[in-house]
Length: 403
Image (tube, rainbow, N blue to C red; front, side, top):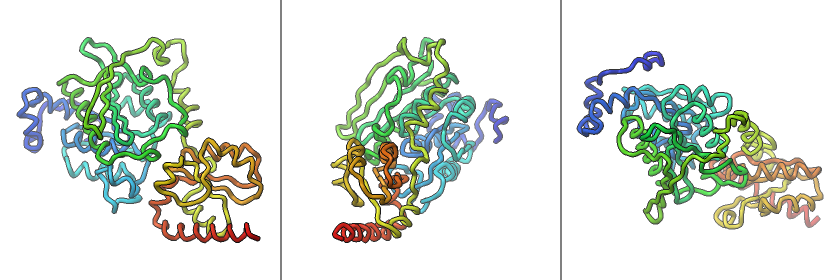
């Protein structure tokens, strides 16, 4: 189905669709009218990870006529315990491509479009403009603010989800309430994004595998409610779910007067997000790939620095010196040799911040941040060989120190 064809409203269901959606059709509040609304709707899923996988599964199964998926990442073994569209054998493939294949087999009556790229300042407004509802499946603050701002300027409802360890959040931003008023948005809850290096995501703090399944399903439910006009969407209401206690609570919020998006005298906030994304996200500065790291430790002695906190290191470590992020500057002031410095954390965010700190100290050593951090190291095919090289490297450094 072409995009032009999808713009023509469908006024009937095929025999195959009638059979597939028969249980929906039995519900008076949905029926043929609601199912046609789903068929004529379009939804953009930003991120095909822990939240995106369950949300996409149920939106596709529900019969949303056009789904868009944007995700630049490839499947890693560590994804599979919570990203239920993927298998271990999919390792290395693009998430969006694999998701499309699986979803198209689930429901051949819908159209699915994919973009193997990041949702960024260059594509945000065009993508948002092309869909009825946007679903946030990302796991970092800068992306969430960018999505929020693009939806505000584009006048599109945003179904928000967030997860961390055992807690999940769901709400609906920027949608019209029963009185036709535009609801609150992310900046009405929080003014602006914190430093990404100090704000852990799931790759840094971990997440219970079933939690994104629950929250992603809640997001799909909100989308279906918005499309069909049933129920009471989570507009101006944040649902907080505690997986350990199996309880939920609701936090009410409303538009605030000093939200910068509503200030006509301010320049567009999307332009400001360009500086935020480049300053607090992970760039290519100081980046050392896993393959280059393997080559480096096989050739020379290095300073391997773990900048995570003590409790993280106790759970799993690949060795090296333990220098928490807040102490990196002091460690650099005492470094006197020119061995390469390779810094790692859980996902590569904090290690890059540490690399920037050390780079400002005019050290004679080259400074690197391990790309993807400990997660990428443990998921690499060459993990056993690299661990052996690290052990050998530690022995070599001890021998050199004695000399």
